[in-house]
Length: 447
Ligand SMILES: NC(=O)c1ccc[n+]([C@@H]2O[C@H](COP(=O)([O-])OP(=O)(O)OC[C@H]3O[C@@H](n4cnc5c(N)ncnc54)[C@H](O)[C@@H]3O)[C@@H](O)[C@H]2O)c1
Image 1 (spheres, rainbow, N blue to C red):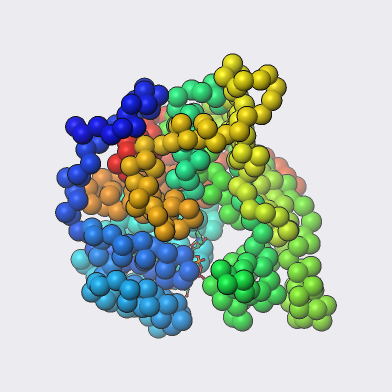
Image 2 (cartoon, protein in one colour):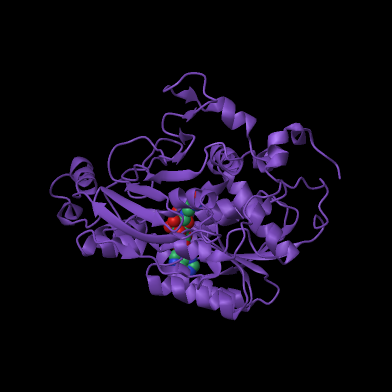
């Protein structure tokens, strides 16, 4: 076994990481992939897939010609055979699923399409990599779980934040016991989505004013959820990493939650500010509270506090806090405190030296490949893990039960708010399997 320099870090070795040989047995295997939904996110996946030698994108599907043209422009940059295009009908993806050679499907459509696309892809015998979240209702999540079970299939939700570099270093420290026994976690989706800007500084999507038919990309469909639903609409970027640290579905599980919502002001205010009080959308009543706060209780006695905060002016932060019996890390102030290790009692230390020292072996091995990949490189890893699982015909490191448990937060928080902040129980999608399942996420430097 060819050992890499980072193995010298005994901390990593003692955490039980398997350091694998550089040349993978599977390097020469090629897999055939189809992508359903090549909007802005699907195009990221398309480009990352095209960069790989072991993946052939043989089909893409979308209903929007502009998105298909943007995808064609991306494909042109790579000297690879053109994929078959399915278009012109909201159910054209069913034809894509009939293409027998396709082993794996990536789904990057609006949320309301995910469950049916996942179920039919599983029924067609494909590996499924779906964008967040798994579906809308609890019934959706159950249906996808059942489809996966009846087909003995594999589904991975492409939750990229689980692979964020700082988050993975902290996971490494958690596994080494540096925070002691975990007690409380915080996370969320805290991202001002009112008026997303493009790289050239221009307004993206609907400029904060338009949504639906007149808008582009997410504002075409996502804003509608804010009109009709009051819930933590986007829990997985926050809960995914925290769930991996708490070994949810692998010896631990979410038991119950309750959610509280503030009044709704931000989305209306920006319409008035930018479109004027007489703009037709100024009459829209948004159901989504500006800040939705959810508390979760876990079987092993930990609590989690999640926040959904997308409609007010604020710099981006997922607001992670990982706290145990020996200390804590917080990403918002980039600080850490570990009793007995931190130099001064009761004083924050900069987290950076710890994040460097405990950098996850995956990041050390693949950092070159992450260059240019989206969201600071973490998008490389989520697809890498998915494609490697397909190549080896093995289970994905995050599975359908993870996807269901994380996604269930949305409908459960909606119910809790509707019932006056009542505490509601999580379903156990694993049917008791959580007591026996073992962690498979990021245990090697391979994928
Ligand atoms: N993980 C991340 O960091 C991240 C980032 C952005 C978006 N997302 C997720 O990715 C998904 C897509 O978001 P997006 O920003 O790309 O939105 P988008 O609107 O840009 O893309 C969605 C695409 O799906 C297409 N579509 C809609 N209905 C379809 C159908 N029936 N058949 C085929 N195509 C159809 C649309 O035409 C559009 O091109 C969402 O689930 C979103 O939450 C994840």
